[in-house]
Length: 296
Ligand SMILES: NC(=O)c1ccc[n+]([C@@H]2O[C@H](COP(=O)([O-])OP(=O)(O)OC[C@H]3O[C@@H](n4cnc5c(N)ncnc54)[C@H](OP(=O)(O)O)[C@@H]3O)[C@@H](O)[C@H]2O)c1
Image (cartoon, rainbow, N blue to C red):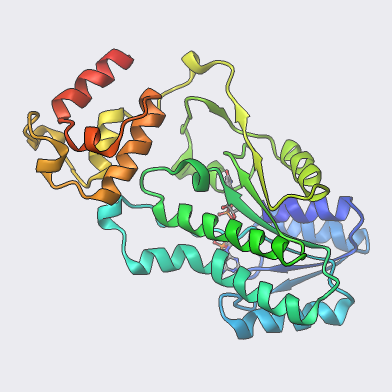
């Protein structure tokens, strides 16, 4: 999305953009875009400072200031380390949080000091921060934290906007092979052009967190991503549900409170049913299988 964002920023009148990345350009489309911008006499700098560190962020800011006053900061970095909560670790949380939260915290602190006239501080969040998804607790936390940072900036009368995007259609992580054939029950993928229209609308409003998602009109025709019982089994780290005693409650299987929270979310997503944690604790896999049959 970053490259498309740059195209959109240029289309809205910017003439100087610094693109921060972890590695030099390597894809054809990256070279193609850089070529077009050069031909149009736009100034584009590819910067490889590591913004996870304060020094790296400071160096990036200094590079930017050499080009003139800084109008805006946009963060659309992403690292995903999906795993059920049982397999999550401090390391995996860190990898996911760093490019989003650490980089933004650094830029927040530095722009407060050096760019008092900043117009835009925009960060890309996800609906995952809102609804939660099994296996993405770290990603949910990273995005949530970004949103709180933007709220804090707004309270301090500074620009700050986080957009909770739903799945995006044409570009970005969901277009990779790993995510091909993934379909959601109630949500369509949003075209990138439509995203920029939403972004623009959010940027001119006085809000800290925007939301952009396209609801599906053909729920019954959508492919289900995965069997819901398997999803719950995955959430609690069970590799094979054939090995489980169908009459044992989730409590007796050893499900802890964090897992219960994930399962609560899953049950809501899969069955549109609100259950309290005690009810979920006392569910058996036998009951979950029955529920999934009723759903079909
Ligand atoms: N695509 C979607 O459907 C979707 C939905 C909701 C929210 N979002 C949000 O939208 C944003 C863009 O997503 P995307 O789909 O474009 O992701 P993407 O295709 O995976 O691109 C993310 C980019 O971030 C770069 N990056 C990671 N860590 C970095 C760091 N420390 N410094 C600089 N760059 C770093 C990656 O670099 P490498 O190329 O080196 O890996 C990659 O180019 C993300 O914030 C994501 O959370 C996307």
